[in-house]
Image 1 (spheres, rainbow, N blue to C red):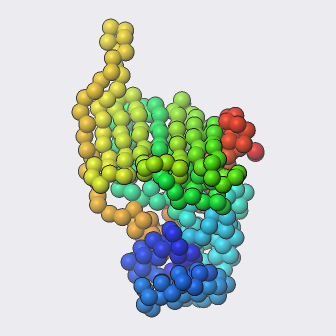
Image 2 (tube, rainbow, N blue to C red):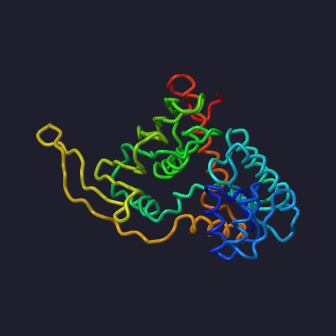
Image 3 (tube, one colour):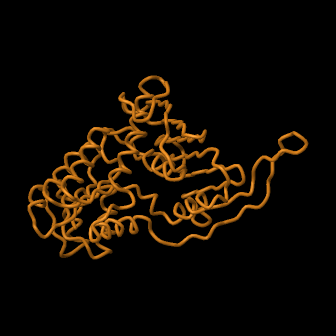
Length: 327
């Protein structure tokens, strides 16, 4: 196993693949990062040259954690070298590039996995169980806030940096793809790179999704709310305890008039484990078992299609755009 890119997020992949006893090599162009890796993980090989790493027959799997603009080129090189590949989200920066990676992996018989880490969070796994069980009733809407002060990027905007997490989970919770998206954004720091976006997704059957993301916010917020016609659930990842709560709340009709119902709140017990470690384990298992991982290339491509529709809507001043339409 090798990791390409050991910076801001890649160092976490390095740590977890090392914890699984799978890490062989790390590739990074920064000599200081290579020196740090060498000191932290004795025995792990380091290089600044991707071609050298890919020519090593001892490496069968590669994780890509480079800037998103390089994902397609780097993942293509890994697949063409006959190796399985894990790509951090987003899979690519265009639908065309994402579709090319999916086709290439299928043609070569390689595993392609995308790093949508929330799928491996025990609270999200439990939330999906609750939704599937019907305890919330029929879904009405889902909204997500993912806010923080930084980390500001210049190569991709806040939509492409933060929203893939929430889009991916919404698709899983609703069980279908949205038919259209409407989004707006505002740019305050880097010209042409929105720092704040609000996206509205319209799903079949009337379910709506709302995603607010910003890296220009005074405090960190990572909250997902799922509203059904019987109950509601809240996943708050900033809490140390009680991250997932079930609310027996809703609107009942009494005498022809809507009446709010505010009953019990229940804290849902969840397993204490690191989502990223579970995600790395899934990649290892999928490669060994020669199967599609939970968050495979198709999953990543579906998220890209929604992102592309939101981006097109932003560029059209909020005009709704059909998901999957050529923009």
